[in-house]
Length: 226
Image (tube, rainbow, N blue to C red; front, side, top):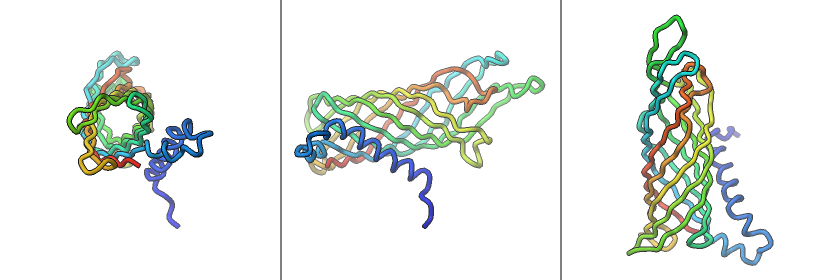
């Protein structure tokens, strides 16, 4: 049997962990009410667009001001959500996208003039957060969310410049609406997310800026409520 691809294995682990974390606290000791808790779960598969704000900072080794930016990109977002009441819900998010990280004025060595540098990177997000639903209007069900987790930057095999993988603590906030356009159990979800994290430097001395950056992500997907 062929081994499971690494990405699929990561997604599978995320689903298991997310469902366990979201459901277990409410299911323990309530076996007769498990079905009702399970009915509060939904899963959403969304396509996203990713736009990252450029940042800059002085390299601590040379004092050079390095400007860091990332290419725009598209990707996918999987969200598993548990809604206990209008004002209390939990969610877990897994996102995948691929960007090219750009660095300008990089001081490679003291004997070379600063130059531009780029690395193609796979980006994986694993975050958990709180969700609150606002009063409905027309057919729309608005919500807000916020949470914390990690974003893993993994340079690609051919375009990653042999840089090592790096994880950054990530804070996110979002707002959106659900539209049960198909049925009470299937509908569309539109949301906009903002993620704040320290700009990646891959633990590489000549890329360090110590600056923070923000990614903005509009997302449109379809949700399935159990």
